Image: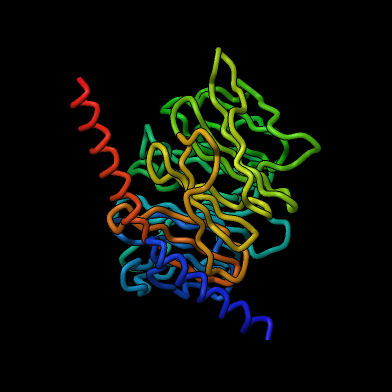
Length: 347
């Protein structure tokens, strides 16, 4: 009865969203269990990774599964290498025995190589300034690797960064600088060529963990806290030659699971409270623009589909919801044009 009540409640809330102009579009039942992460692969194609030991390439418009990539245990993150290859960060099946970075062929789903790690990787991402290398980090390490080449058939280690404890995620502020969160109350800022952080920022009191991080510009990033009583998001900016907490976004009633950038001012947050929210970082008062309600379990991840002007959100039960924000973006663009015309008239 409780499940049926939640489903009925979710259906009503989706109608409310649609009536408000931010339409629920479709559900993709992608996995049998927790969606760990979502990322892009081509136009309107989503890479999803899951606790069910698979990563999948999905068509966001039709909901069809294009390809399945099989791993032996939980897949924590994926990233597309153009249109031909996928990197997957996954756990080893054996208990407490490290993890893998695996490269798959998109067309066939075949495994190209398997890089064994001494730690369980929480993520994998391509270095923006050099598509020939990637970063990965996890419960006991943070590393940068060269991609395989004709002369070296397996990845070659470039750098190992000196971290204490695990690394949950990283975000690049520019080509030389990135920020990491360790699942602790502090975050670190790094130069890609230095093994130790250039700055350490205590973002929270009482050992509240920072679970996610998102770069909005070269001088501003966001962090999401995993506090189960109140999911806080904070903006940290480089002001007067130091990193300073500037705003706090506090509408979520449970821990933040992911943060995703839409454009230079808008971002998405997902939470254990079963919702996702869209925010405008430029607002004087840090309140959300709207809330996506419809998941019946923790919302673990999200990705922005630029061509469809939609947000995809994944949850603990293996479902992915697609939400249109095209009307809002169009209204925002029209408002900007009107404001520009008004300013021109004043001149």
